[in-house]
Image 1 (spheres, rainbow, N blue to C red):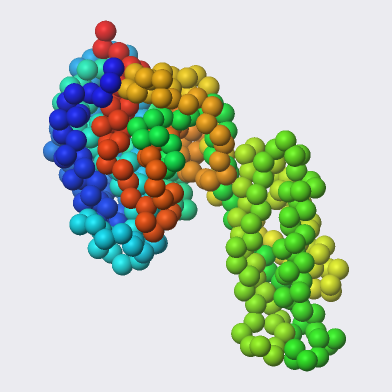
Image 2 (cartoon, rainbow, N blue to C red):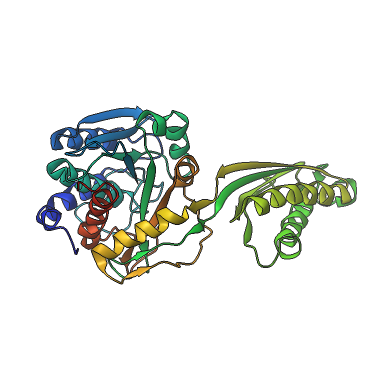
Length: 388
């Protein structure tokens, strides 16, 4: 099956929703306007049940098929939040909120799932329940974790859950997926160093925290280069180094922060343990003290094998052979991982075409792919829950 005809008919409507959301971006859990719009549209479509406030500001819609004898429920998830980036493109739907923009395409994700919900509520050509999940705070806030911890999966009896994200650089309207680990665990760390401050002209009386910090920064790269198996993947990036306020003062303290990325639980454990040792012992060698606060955020996003094969087969129904089932792993994080830890499922990329990558101030979601994404969602439900 190609694009669903009915979905193609309301392409312009979905585009208008997407651009309205784009013009009014909101951060993390403060997606009040977006969530209200989603809930309003779901009720307008005649969705059987609309629940707000899950995961603080998340919205869940329940659509029952013409038949419900299968007793099965399929969850479909989209994210709603934007990023703290100033938009630079000057289009009619440019962000009206200074310093905030939809630079990751969550406006498109939300609009496409709304389009699928409209179609599914109109046709109900399936046996079971479609649960549409609109999640806040994907960009670092862990909204997916909060929705799961509030019991969403059990409350709506979700059997399997699926997610989708646009991918700049992939051909427009194509799909890409892989079984197993696809996106990295995304962790943060804070390193606090204490030395002895003093006059910069008398370094012999001080323990220089900037020197200690520089050595720690360098030494941390040895963890990836010399401790992690070269066949495995890991990234340690120090992204801030804050110390001192004057050109002639050696600072008493310094702080480094950064991110660590891994694609397996074992390497994640290894990285935390070894980084702690390197930080403490490097500082001690200079007579300073240092502590590492390693903060685990998003786990590895790992697709389940059967559901990956199923998602790929549905994608082929929509776009034929333009489905890559062995897309490369990436070190970016995604909190849909929490939902995949709670239920079997799969996460798929939809090709955005050429243009700036996500998190760029010139990024904009490609409205051409809206019917493709909506059709994928619709066919996924109808195929997973056949009405006979």
